[in-house]
Amino acid sequence: MPRKPTRHNPSSRHRPLTFSAFGRSMAMAILSKKARREIHEPKDLPTSSGNGCVNHGKDKMEESNSSDSEDFEGVVQADFVFFDPKPGDFHGVKVLLQTYLDNKLWDLSSFVDLILGQPTVGTVVKIENDEDDGVYSVVTALNLERYKDSKCVIELKDYLLKVCEDMDVIPKLRNLVGEHAKDVGLVVSQRVVNLPPQLLPPLYDALFDEIEWATEDEPTVELQNFFRFKFYLIMSKIYKHKNANGKKGMAESGEEAVIYMKPEDEIFLELSSWSFSFPLHAQQVTTNELKNYRLMGLVMVVEASKVSTFRKKFHLLVDE
Image (cartoon, rainbow, N blue to C red; front, side):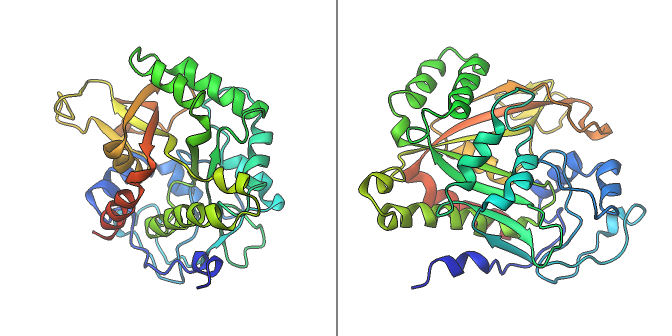
């Protein structure tokens, strides 16, 4: 059974971002007038999830957003294709990861090199026959023990321990990135904000399939073992209401307590063994709809045994 070719056939149709209740909340949070204006500027490079905007559709399928006709009218077409990471993707991946650790100065270039140096597990999404060869998404999983001596990984661990203020979580986090690092896969998933949502389940399917294959196909037992993850560490961002009521999941005003920038994070959080959030300092999208929200970092730990459940739930969420 051919393996790699399955990563190059995302076949689901693209519908507008507001295809579901969740999609509507994400659109509300992100599609500001500034972002919509960027659709008309195809020469601009895509930026990281939280600020970027794709200026194309998907799979040669037509897309029109009637609700925003005053800002954008017409049809955009494109073929999005999955590729193995390669050195030539360095700039595009680095742009996507620019705020991965908020506004911290760290060895991001070396972190990108780690991602690109692991082509058997990981995917970048591009537009077919795109002259600029832009990268619109990257997803991979890095073993914390394998790269424990890399400066960028040391800095990442230190950053997590510094921003975590939950006294119950700190010992768990320290243990996870220390004694149990060999069992931990750091899931790195960054993309432009309006990448067609129907691409996302196949993208994660490719990641977890490749991890499974790597436990058999890597040339040495040592390398195979680096992909036998027991836990996944996921870092993301959310918008949290300033007056959120944790128990009810709603703010006093009746607004949603949390707006997830990535739909999968809602599922990861539901399945997580533990998690914590913390305030971010990087500049956030400012819209009238977000005036009562603050940008927060979200860290989640999910047992590898929950992956099959995640995949099923994610397909259902996007297909609904």
